[in-house]
Image (cartoon, rainbow, N blue to C red; front, side, top):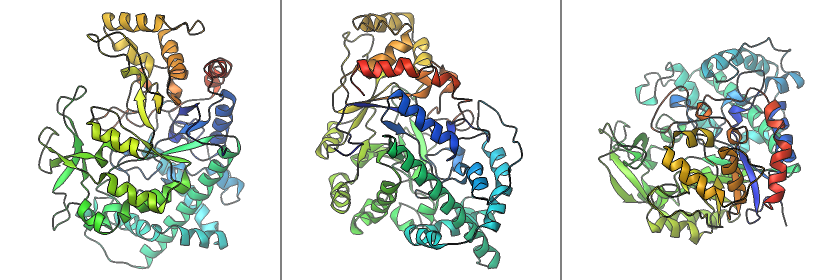
Length: 483
């Protein structure tokens, strides 16, 4: 059986590339990423799930990217450029060991990337990449025009004129994407050689300020000036009094259907080559999505609208029958969402933190077998932080539930929840690095509905503490038959 089959009981680890430790303030595609893969293998994990690697847009969020296809140049390893003799050894960069300072890192790396470009010699492999990356010409033009217009959103651009300087800058952008693609594909190859399956991640929606929208305006509900007539989000729920107003433009699914969903099919096609499987964020929107008038300031006033559903997936799987998709199917859903997921035999997700029921409900714990169980995701507090925010009655109830499971090696409540995640019925168990290290809420990746620091900024300072957990977690994986 080919490795990476998602029908095998196994375990994986959730860790953004950006949060990996190194000497440059942000994780990249360099040697520390290879070290992380080695550590995953020593643990016994078979899957490494990451967050989107696309160019970070509004709020440095990977879910508001400038492109659904390109990488962010922050992930270029300067060490590897040095090994390729494209730059000289780099100067020391003074960075925060705990949080990512995106703008400082961009400013630091940019001169080295320019020097590498000046020394780079275009070869046959580079030319082949240009042919393969069907999206690159448009993306490079978009970024150059954005820079020419002082990084304002494209709706406010004034200067559209092409010139020699613009063409030279486009070549530089293409070079960066070639380096990124080359470095990443070597990371993926190394992971696969070591039995590690990489799960990528793509958002359902795209950012308004993106090459995706700029060059595909007809695929979105925009007015004549290019502004959205409706925007995306989710209505008020248990977690958010006013809902979440994301602001992404809504797709024009009638137009997309007439064109065989080309924009969506191309997104999947490109990402299929980059990853072994793809998690689709906000899967429920394929069934129904929350449509909010563009002039609203909260997500309260919206309406549920039918999505493309089976029609889109039939078109997609007809062209790419082997693509492996994961459905992010969290939250309050109507049954049709689950029927859509199950029709295509897609794995869904369950968060252990929310699987103990409510205080007033019966004291039971059940996870359906055909899904991925998570200790938490980037949108949750690590287990330690989550547990200590509960009131005493709720803590007591959860302790009572877990008491029936005899996890003698798990001494603290966060450890017991971690062990329970590995031991549950779910086909795949996924744990956050923060939960292995018993970190608290200060290491949370994102707080939905908020913008700016500390969202997307947490990073691991070193692998030392993680390595100390290898023996214990490896034994737990053996105990739970996930190796």
